Length: 407
Image 1 (tube, rainbow, N blue to C red):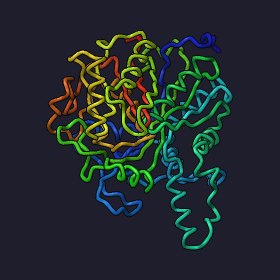
Image 2: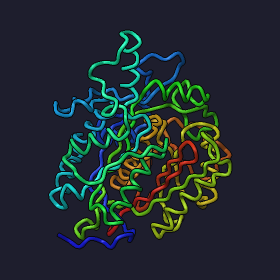
Image 3: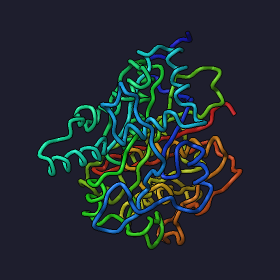
Image 4: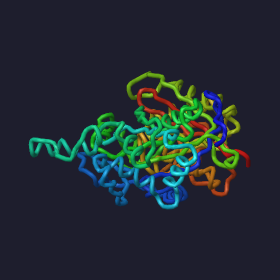
């Protein structure tokens, strides 16, 4: 067994496996194919009826059932998670098993982000209660609704015994989970961490955003001069992050993370983007990099007028005019607590597949934006360093930098 790095020393951490589930389908290959096209994958929700018109990034593929011994954890969230764990071609389960063999189950942790957890099942359970006067006999709040149930399920499914917890900071949850995984490894508490985010569609989320007049009727158009709101989505983004090993010098690495909480408003970002600026600057400081070294920034870019404008103002403060950037929520919808992890996986794919994603749905870039917004995918493009931004309600901001090492 190789020597563990000293506690609190932040170093580049290899990402040894990655998997996703989005409206494009199950697995990174399905998402990659979606990113290379120009068509959105949004649809009218089929899981439940709404009294307003909108499109959503609903996962249409059949989801796997949990094993009999873990059925008490069965929710749409955990079934989406299982689909990612076992997605063909991604090898995530095998990679986790190898990490357990390498370090031991007690040295392998789980940190996940979510905003909805098992809310969909809770909604179904209380509708049953309205009709029948009692909750369904198979509904277990602690194993289905509670946030920690998601991490407990993954821990049981994969036989892990290391630290496990769930982070819920709205739209930055998945990114903050990855940052937390970095801390667990760099402080010596873990040698490997399965990190990411999971969120599933539910009535609460869609009705809640609609009550704020933030939901677009048609597919969202982030960064467009005519953008008028978000399209909600669901999905999973999972990454296995490990402490460095000499044989992984050519892998994609997590280089730096930055986090901030500006607490300007319950839902609106700080008008000057102060929290976003701090998060981006911290990620550069931790990675030991400069803005001009970044080849691409995956923007949070939700499609609302205010959020996109504030983020681009923050970008203008941090980056020079040559930086290339874009947003991908027009393809998948805004997956909320999973967004940071799903889009970190998109950055991972940009590095491994040497391409820059376009901004699905974008027709006319808002002329107020002074940075280079990518409209259509750019193939066969050398990519060495990328940044991923996730900015949530309450000023919960997170940025991370991924890059190739040793090439």
